[in-house]
Length: 498
Image 1 (cartoon, rainbow, N blue to C red):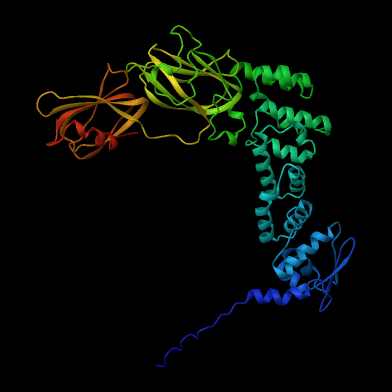
Image 2: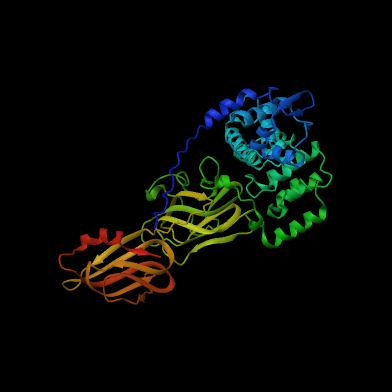
């Protein structure tokens, strides 16, 4: 049988740079030209094969009539088109970064002609070109020609500067389409009353006959006072719509579920000494500061129902409060409420029956409120390091403290642990090598009532039980040989709750 022929080896040589060098001399030259591109103010000679090979737009035009000798390109800026044509012939482009009009014209043509690589490259450069002077005109062009990436760049830039209190007149040169696309977003980073003022100011200068700009306002997220003192007097909104919003607010309060998701609030402390006021409470000088001294913590008189009340300065969205609890004993029950108007209060944290100390990481359903009050149920508690955030990350690490250990008969041992605050827990993971045996593990939320956890035989154990509120954990057993109370630090590092 004849041997099968071995496949022939192939040598592949690529010299794309040479190809562009060979093509570039024919840019704008009549030599071998077989088509004319008719602009409003000039005629340009080109080559069908180059246009079709490098640009889907021209390929589509030429496929319809391969024999055509002219293509009319009306309302196309000559300077921008010549730059695009240069890119088609050479694969490169040079633009003066200070001339945003040229850049936006070139970007528009790159988008229309489906030159994706060029469009992407220009958009990457736009981040360094966009500024307060040109962002509105660029946004108008992006919306006029449906350039999504440029629109997103402009939105991001405006969002960043809205938080720095742009003047309302800044938005007046935007087209109606640009205003609608800007204001209807969940991510627009402004209080809803400020969004209304921006829209109302724009409507005074521009025509909004179909009310589409004003329709971007989420009236049910405003407060009653904002509607009555700002929106209603403007006479820009139908009374029926405002009455409906007022009825909703009166019944349920401002709708947090319809609020804008202000991305700029994420990770930003909304409660600092510079931007909020403590309107009720005593000894509040160190309320926002780093301290662990009991005498420096904030508190309130035991019978004062106003507690420690913080005014954020405006309605804000948040779902996380962290603070530091200093106690003279091991008992610091408290609860936290929020309000938009100091009249109606909504409870977000109720630890009034539990014990807490040290750092408190408090997560709850997203709230839209201006006022926060902490009511302490003990006159032996002090608060400091108070912070408020909109957070998407929930901490899962619990801080454990060894309260004390008690040695009974030789080898017998009890370890009492506490969490820094009450948690809903259904699992405990513990390494048992520190104990020769464990007779019981119990949990409690108040130190008085204890519930047992079913135990395994030995090993590294994940204990599962019905979910319960836990503030304290008690472990009873016999220590392993050579283990003393000094093992506690390592024991705590290996102890986990879920």
